[in-house]
Image 1 (cartoon, rainbow, N blue to C red):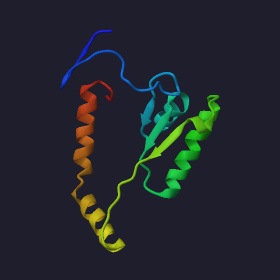
Image 2: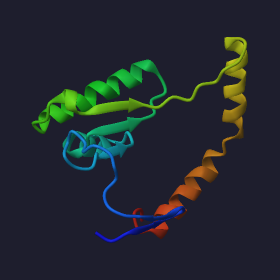
Image 3: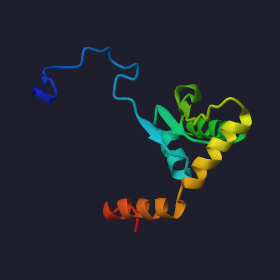
Image 4: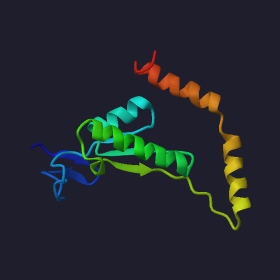
Length: 126
């Protein structure tokens, strides 16, 4: 094992943490596309998703668990992490206003263009 550089010097040896219950690195899949769901069901220990409602989050959860079973995995072994974006204010009306103001600042056309630039450059999208 060779030492690795770090901010405070050199790291020598293995990390002083217990081995994962999987006995290997944990595999995390982030994304909700059909292809991402299949990958998560077949290979992942954790799948991260951002669904826009409780109903959609429940449907996503059921879907990936069913897919995991299809690959012979115990559905309870695939953990689903639902991301959230909280907006806190004195009232629900004010928190909705904060969310709407933030949404208004989002330029989805630019975001999509930038996404395509990044991934086309790396030969992932054509």
